[in-house]
Every structure is written in structure tokens, then in C-alpha cells.
Length: 366
Image (tube, rainbow, N blue to C red):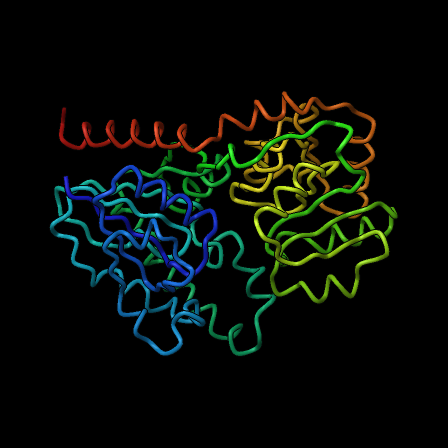
């Protein structure tokens, strides 16, 4: 069976790329198709595959400005010749599923989310854009939504990374989706003895508006409680300016330092709505509880008052009340770690393999 893996772009190494690596483990002979690649930021595992890009990769400054070429990506995908492939797996949160497979091929889409900038977060992106972009967004996103809906009809089977994403797939594409959480390298994290855990809370992730890092910083400023923030992004300098004496903004950190802070955090603060959210699993794999906004993927991963706290009010008061509630409870680090283990890498491989085998049998009429 000849397999093609289609991923939106290979510019970073985040959750989507980890899923692609897992697919490459399942199908070591698969070819990879993507819009743009930065070889210096693509893992050796993926570089070991034959990788073909669309014409977007040849456009000026594509590695830096790839999102500016979004309106051209539907055309670029449809130019890919996938006639020799029996199985196509698209990895979607940017345009990836819009390829044209062979009529008898099976197309499975693992969806991290329908494109946020044209669907559920369209108005957020529009509000944050400059005047020129704001003026162009309505006609361009109208075209992209129509194309995206039609592209969804070319998919034989959807798999979502969370129940929240499955609900979006149903809402925007009118399609059902199986839910298989993405793989997390749980064994890379280890709990430590309780007497070595610090009083400081921790926030980890890209520092962008929708992840609500400012909400966390301002709340901990007001509470005069210790908070460590790890991550880069466009809000990094703004947060450093607003951080009070109890808040440390460390910026990006190497993996060994991230492991160190996970294991010693009093709890992870996760105030934004994520499609899934690997960071909470990493924290729980370190035996630490999570205080998370009770929307999106956190609902699938955090057990309220057992592995953390879910709160419904994404305001300073709501987060402060969640912290107060957390501090009045006791959490078992071994129980938290055991819960995290169900999201491990091998579990993902087994689940995906089973679902693809069943889909292929059904597709072939077995």
C-alpha cells in the first residue's frame, strides 16, 4: 500500500509535527507533502522521508510569510499529483485536506482544528489585524470557507484530536469524527518527591493573545503569588513589562529546563482555550495538577478536582477563585501521573492503526 502524508507546513516543531512524526512511524515508507518547509526546523525523522512541497515554497520569503499566501494554498494543494497513492492521510489545521486523491484511494484527515482564522476565531483574528488586512479578510475568507467546505467532502474519514474539535467539524463541515487524542511523550517527564515541589505556579506555551498569558500575569500580580512563565511569542516583551515582583518571564527554555520547572511547579496555569493542549499532559506526566479554563481540549484531559481544577469564568476573578479552590484541595501526584499515561505515544499508534485498518476494510467493502 502506497501512503502519502499531507501536512500544512513544516516551519515549527509543535503538536501537529509530533502527530506527523507518529504517522511517519506507522508508515515509514510514506511520502510527505507540504506547502512550505524549513529544513533547519524540521526533525531528522521527517527529513528521512521523501518530502515534496507545493509551489508556495518557491514564492518570495515563503518561510517567513507563508500565512500571507493562504489564499493560494487551495490551488496549490489541488496541483499535487497523488494518483499513485492508495492511502492519503492529511494533517489539518492549515490547508492540507484539499488534495484530490485517486477515486479508489482512502483519504483520512486527522484534524487538529478546522482553520481557526476562517471559522471559530475569525473575528478575533480580524480584530487584531491591521487596516489593510481587515479590509481584505471578508472576501478572501468567504472564498476560503466555500473551498474548505467543499474540500471536507473529499475526505472519507475524519479523526479529531478532541471532542471540542469534533464538534467544530460537525458544525462547519456537517461531518462526524472519531476522537483520538494526539501522542504525548509521557516518559520524558518524571514526578519528584513532594518536598521538592516549589510554591511557584507555572505557565508554558507560545505567548499569544488567545492563550491568555496576560490574564495569568495580571492575576498573579494582583494575588502577589509566584508565577513562572516559559515560552516565546509576540507578547513576550509586553509581559516582561507588566510582570510584577512575584512573576518571572523566562522566555523560551531548553527542554531540560522545561522538565525541571514542570516537576517543581505547584500547578500549571492553562487559562486559554486550546484545541487539545499537550502542555497540560506534560505537566500531569510530571505529577503536577493543572488549573485550566474549562473549554476546548482541557475538558478531555483534566479531571476536575482529581488531576486539577477546571474554571468557567475566563477573567481575573474567575482565575483567582480557581486558584483559591485549588489551594484548599489535596492532589495525589501518582494518581495524576497515572492519568497522564493514557495519552502516551504507543497508545496513539495503536488507536490510529486500528481506525485506519477499519476504515480501509470498510472502504474496500470487506
